[in-house]
Length: 138
Image 1 (cartoon, rainbow, N blue to C red):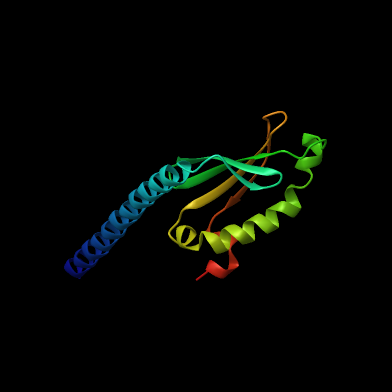
Image 2: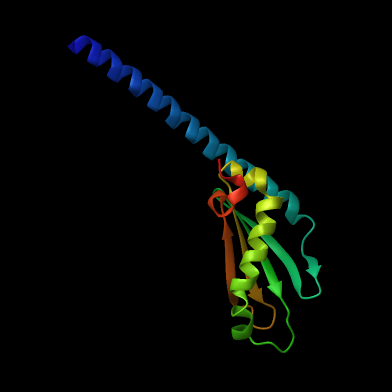
């Protein structure tokens, strides 16, 4: 009986070790993809996205792509722009879920960071991972 238990424990250990190795490979692959994607996209930046927004830079950080946007809303104060976070978050999250589905499914997170063109201060971030996208849930 002890022999069977030891054999079963070794089998479980081997499976867990294989899963850990696979997780490490996926993590490493995601970091490489994030770095390469940021490098490629940064070659075309800065770029105007709409009349009020410019995409300045994309930063790779681990398994996260951080998009830095500058918002120029004319006479609106930073406080007024920060109040728009809730309404913007829903729209931006939906767009990220659709546009970055493959990245998100593999465990990559996307952050849209908005800063004020006038003050250069942060306004708000929208962070999206697979869990924020109902359509990507398995």
